[in-house]
Amino acid sequence: MHHVIPIHELGPQGPSMGAAVGACVHCGFCLPTCPTYVTLGEEMDSPRGRIFLMKEVLEGTMELEVALPFIDNCLGCQACQTACPSGVDYGGLITPFRGYAEKRRKRAPMRTLERTMILQTLPHPKRFRAAARVGRLAKPLAGHLPDAMGSMLRLLPDELPKARPLPEVHPAHGERRARVALLAGCAQQALDPDIGWATLRVLARNGVETVIPPAQRCCGSLAAHTGAQDHARASARHNLRAFDLDDVDAVITTAAGCGSGMREYGLLFAGLPEEDAARRLAERTVDVTVFLAGLGLREAPRLEREVAVAYQDACHLAHAQGVRREPRDLLKAIDGVRLVEPAEWELCCGSAGTYNVERPDVAARLGDRKATNLLATGAEVVVSANIGCMTQLRTHLGDRLEVVHTMQFLDRAYGAPGPS
Image (cartoon, rainbow, N blue to C red; front, side, top):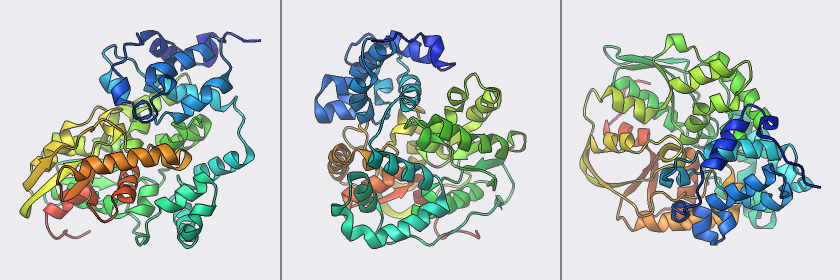
C-alpha cells in the first residue's frame, strides 16, 4: 500500500524539495553534464530521472527501495544546476531527500559497518591519521577486502605527511588589511597539512590576520551530503558556537566541499532554533580564493619561468558555490603562469566526498576520464581547490602530473615562505 507524503510532513526542508521537483521541465540540458548519465547512459541515472524518482516516492507511487540504487549513484556534484535553464535547485532536493531516505532505508550489515567507520573516522583528523597509518600497512591487501574498505586503502598516499597543527592565530605581515577565521578541514589536516600552512602564509603576505578557532569541528558536509543529517547537525552546532562573527571579516574555507556544506547550514537547520545563527554563518563563509581575489593581492607573485597550469574545477566550488573566476584570476595574477583549460571541466572527477569509496567502479572511470583530459592540456601542474579532488587526481595521474592546491601554488610563486 503506497502512502502519499505531503510536503509539510517532511519538515521545514519540504518546501524546498517541493519547489525543486516542480521546477524541472525535463528538458534534458542537464544530461551531458551529469557524470553518471555520461558514464552509465541510463535515464534514471540522470538528474531529471532522479527528480522523477524522488517525486514518485514522495507522492507514494513508488517504493523507496526501487529508487534508492539510482539516488545512491548520484555524486551530488550539482553540475546539473549550472546547466539548468529553469533554475532547478537540485542540491536543495537531493540532500534533504537523502536525509529523508536514510531514516527509512535498510542496509546490509557490512554496508552499515563501512558507513559507520567512515562517519566516525574521516571527520576526525586524529582518528583519520591513526587509521591511515594502519591502512598503509594493509594497503597490499586492498584487492582482497570489501569494495569500500579496499577503495579507502587504494586512495591512501604511499607516505603520510608529518602532522603540523595550525596555531590559534597567525599574524598579518605589515599593516593588517583584514582578519578572518579559518575552517581547518578534517581529512586535509591528515592528507596534506601544508595546504593550511600555505594558506596562512599567503594570507599573511597580503595583510590578513587569521584565527583558527580551537573549538571548531568538522563542517558536517560529508555527513549531510550522504543523508546523515543528524550527524551533520551535531558537528555543525559546535561551529555555530566556535566562530565569532563579530570578531572577523569573514570565515574562509580551503576545501570546496567544506565551503559548500557550511553555506548550506541554513537548509540543514531549517525550522530549528539554530536556523538564524546557521544562516548568518553561512552568509559569512567564503572560499579563500573569493576572499583573496576580492581583497586584491598586495604584491604580485612570480615564477622563475613560464609554467603551463591546468585549473581543475572542484564541483562544490564551481557548481554548488558558483565560483570559477576568482581562482583563475589569482593564478593569472602570477607572473609566469600560462593557464590552460581542460576539456569537460564540468564533469566530476569521481571523488565527491565518499563516492570514490562507496562507488569505486564509477568513480574510477570518472577519475581516468578526468586524468586523460588534464594530460591532454600539456600542463606541467594541476591546481585544484579540494582535498578530495586532489586525492582522486593524484591516484589517477600518478607521477605524470603534479597536483597542488591553489594556495600551495600561490605560496610557491611567492618564493621561500616567511616566518610561520
